[in-house]
Image (cartoon, rainbow, N blue to C red; front, side, top):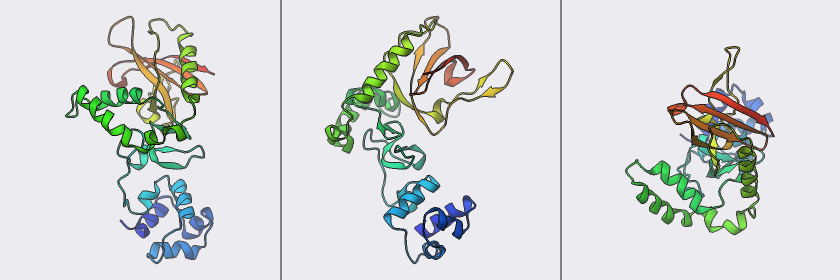
Amino acid sequence: MDTKDIIYELRTKKGLSQDELAQKVFVTRQAVSRWENGETVPNTETLKLLSKLFEVSINTLLGSPQKLVCQCCGMPLEDELIGRNADGSLNEEYCKWCYADGTYTYSDMDELIDVCAGHLAGDGFSEEQAREYMKQLLPTLNYWKRYEELSDNGEFEQFKKQLIDEINALNVEGMPKLESLNALVGKYVNLEYRLPSGEKVKFLDDGTTYLGNQLESEFGGDRCFGVLANMDFILICTYEAEGANPELVLYKKR
């Protein structure tokens, strides 16, 4: 699709008139009309506003001329997987797992290789092959090339260590000691819990990136512990395979 068709489709899906769209991105109705007629395309600053308004990448607005790849882990990027800056705008350099709310979530290449190798193994790769592939790939990506410039001098890693200490201090019965926290996107871990009243609720935002991990229960059996946290809360639950039959163990404001 061309830019003119993409803007028209996004505008109409959102139920906006040309006048209403023009007001939201600070241009005239005539400018919107020219975009949709293919006479002109929005300038860079307007594309940023359109990207934020429609929650799609600038790459999508321009008809996807580039193949976007996360410059931290190498994952191919679709709009729903792109990380966000602190102001909520999309950052087309990174995925949600590697960059969330303006923060880089990985500062240790070996840790990222461990995470990625586990996911790649089984998709035509042995774990060792996946690990070797990631060792070759990561140093070629912009984040790791510019790590000294982009890193936060270990501040986020210190936050994760503090969070791990807080979680272990809760001494949840049957849950082994937590050793690490990984970036997890809400959409994949937003389980639905049944309250004593019978009502079912979710506590997370599908589009937000959290820190978490899965731990085998010290009691054995089929249930695992799930840990999720951010700057505002700690959530601990148990569930069966594929997140089935979740039960909330603890929800604590920080």
